[in-house]
Structures are given as structure tokens and as C-alpha cells.
Image (cartoon, rainbow, N blue to C red; front, side, top):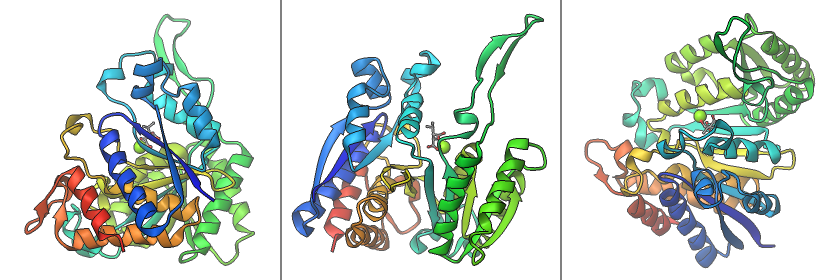
Length: 358
Ligand code: IPM
Ligand code: MG
């Protein structure tokens, strides 16, 4: 069976990093027999420029037909002034929502050779391997009503709605407990139950689902404390499950524990493990087109795709090992440079990974 992959390069550094990931897939195809078919699609600002829509109808169709989707990054200053509904980010949110990609896996794993790249002390992050499970299709991101309006006194105001249904909480909780079972059976659910009713409800439902997983140690933590604990002693966590907005914030935080946001892949899965895979970083317009971006998060996103959606675990391991080899040999992109290492560009980093595939 040939895997059909939709390649959405997007904006900014997107085309460069997705280009590197494409070369890795092509190498797996020609050298290791991976059966893939790649199809490009327009997304984000690129979609707006070509069709006026950040998620063109063609892309939506291709996404529905694909076995998996690889996304670079979307957004940039060029599109910040257009109507909110038509901004690049909305295309991404619509795709997540329409494909019901509710389960977002954001691993924060420290590659031992990158310990020095973290701003935290080596002993704090050494051996770090945590999995953040972020709910991705609910919360204040999608809740209605929302908008900017004028009140009865003539004053303008902005408003959003934090809402979670019981079924939304149940399905992400089940995903998180199942993932915890594959690891050290420790799950921490992060909320703001002391202030926000919607997340008090979150805590109640996660606890209830937990009764079905007596072998998993469930704990709860307020999000402010979780942010502090992630910086103070991140290794106390194994799997964290949290809401869409808190997960957005905590995953950026967790990424920096590992040295660079340029290293971290992510998976967004639906109930049948079909998914979209993307680096957690943005489109970095400041370095776009300069052959400077770190393609490793995108390349590692391909590994997640092979592992979680396409059932090609051996091929996934090839990629992960190749990345480790290249880093161990001392090659770095600028974001993860360290004394004694050699700085190379996006294309060269992609080539090194391709060479190291075994
Ligand atoms: C992320 C990004 C997105 C989000 C943006 C680009 C809409 O920050 O994937 O973390 O907020 O989910
Ligand atoms: Mg984010």
C-alpha cells in the first residue's frame, strides 16, 4: 500500500524545512523501499496569495483524501492586516477542526548532545523526555460567542468563550491515559480549576476517566504552578494532558527546556490516528529564505508521521537515529550552536540527515 502524503509547505521558512523533509522521504523511498506518494498543497499565506483563502477548497479535499499531512508553518507580517477570518492561522485552525485532529502530541525530548543548548542547567534537563498532550479542537480557540464589539455604554470590548463539552474532555483524557500506559504510567492533568468553571469540569471528567485506568498515577496541577514546575524541575513529569490554550503556552515553554524550539516535532491525530504533522515553531519570517532555519523539527515530524499514522516504525527509527548521528558528529544549525560545533544551513542539514540514514 502506498502512503499518500499531503505536503503543505506554508509560509516563511515553511518551503525550506518541508523541502528538507521531502528529501528525507525520497531517500527512504529510493534506498529503503518506503512506499510514498507526495502531493503539494497550498496553505496559509500561500493559499491566500494564490486563491484568497488560507485553506483553499483544493487543499481541504486533498487533506481529506491523504493518509497523512506534513505542514511547515503558516503566517507572517504580510498577512497580519487582513480580516481575522481570512488570516493564515485560521486556515490551520479550520483544518485541525474539520479533520477532528483533537489529540496533539508535543514531545519534549532532550538530545544528550544538545544539553548545553538549553538555557537551564544541564542537571535540570539531562535525560528529559516528556510528552505534552494538548487538546486541539476545543477551548477558547473555537468557543462562541467571540469577537470585538461595542457595549451599551459605547465602549469597545473583546470577548472569547472557554467551553469544553464532556465528550471532548473524555476523548482527550482517554488518549492521554493510553499514552501514559506506553510510558511510565504517570499522567498530570493541567487546569485552572481554582478559577475557571470550564476547567473545574475538565478536572472532574479527567478524574472520572482515570477510574478506568487504575494502573496510571493521575495527578492534577494548576497551570501557573505547572509553568513554574516545568522550569524548576521538569523531570518530575512524564505525560501532561491539558487544554488547547494552556497546551499552546506550555508547549513553547517545554520546548525551550530542550535547547531550541527548532528541534520539536508534533502530531495532531484524529480518532483513527490519521494525522497532521508539523514542527511546533512558527514561520520565522525574519530568517525566511536565508537557508538558516533548523529543519530537524520538520524532519522529526516525518518520523512521528511514520510512527503514529503510517505504521512504519522501522523507517521512523531510521530518521531519529540519523538526526542523532548528525548532531553527534557536531553539525548544528545556528539556533543550536555550541562551542566546538560546525554551523551549517537548512539545505546542508537536510543533506547530512539523508546521508546518515541507515
Ligand atoms: C501552535 C501555533 C498555533 C496555535 C497558531 C499558529 C494558530 O502557535 O501550533 O502552537 O496557537 O495553535
Ligand atoms: Mg503555539
